[in-house]
Picture (spheres, one colour):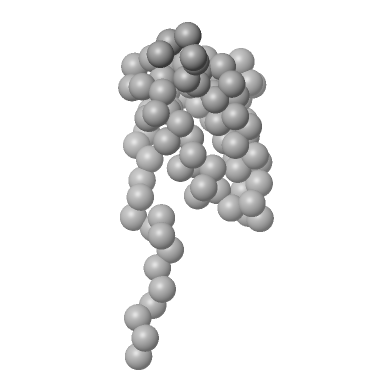
Length: 88
């Protein structure tokens, strides 16, 4: 018998409060404020990694809204909070 296939994200959990109040149904200003807070406290890379995780786990078919909002906010973070040449 072949072993049952497991989903790659079955045992990965996002801790409550990891994105400081970010939710897909909140207005953009509130989401961006939460992401700025995470980037300031935990670092830009951690914030992008957590948001990417949500975007990757959210199925385009079953949870298209979360997937789209997470991707949109990652692009926003890259434009506004990302690495700048002046900082280097």
